[in-house]
Amino acid sequence: MPAEVDAGLALLSDQLILATVLLYVFAMIGYALDLGFGRSKVKARAVAEPALVTVGGGTAAPPASEESSAPAVKAPPAWAMWAGPVAVGLSWLGWAANLGSILTRGLAVGRWPWGNMYEFVVAMCFAAVSAFLFMNLRYRIRFLGAFVMVAATLGLGFSVRYLQVQAGPVVPALNSYWVAIHVSAAIIASGLFIMAGVSGVLYLIRKDTSVRLPSLADLDRVAHRAIVIAFPIWTFAVIAGALWADKAWGRYWGWDPKEVWAFITWIAYAAYLHARATAGFKGKAAMIVQLIAFACLLFNLVGVNIFLGGLHSYAEVPG
Image (cartoon, rainbow, N blue to C red):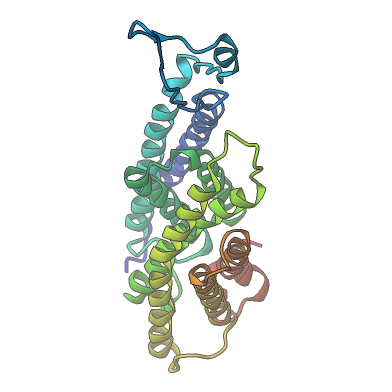
């Protein structure tokens, strides 16, 4: 690993992060406009009325009272039709800037670019946006865009304001190929868990009368699919962490706070999947279990490093 840091690339990485935040903010606004104005204020219901056959073989119009009772549909403004596609485009531009900031940070220091809390949170936000964008290609979940961008923007803003440290070398324990295995898996799983967490929060706050937020069935489906993909990846991350611990410290498990909370998080998500698969324990109850698991994840990723320390206290959180 080089002793010197490429200051130019490190500065470029910082600038790309600021560009990422701005692009995510504009994308968030676009998704919000799409959610608020891109669809008609009243959802139309297709009502198939049987034709009234007259004696002459023609059809009679339905009674005036029935016409007046049909739900009126208010067409969205012309500009609102572009809000969603523009927001998706801005999201991809922000995603590219986010990726560029990670790559330039790694090239600047000659190592994997997640050796401290700042780098980890930046990568985790990138993983969350990646999960949303690629799932949107398959499942059309643009309705979650505003909320995912809020989470990503807040995460990046927090990391830039409170966690940012100068690019530099890491402690010997982190100068290992296990960073690429263990930490990468944790980042990918965390991004998917964030998607599920956002869906879970919306699930609990959604009112039955709301026509703007996604349906409860859609939110439940997105959360479940994200966790089904993320859980085995998190399982692999925990196992890889144990193997790394044996190589670095000579034991697989030492009840370090980070190890304990990683295992608690695993148990919590396993409980959600079990609850989700158990008849009679779905919907709101299962979603609450999922959000408890999400809270465990957030504490494991951020709270442990700030409040508990331990062998993982080399995360370089600024004082």
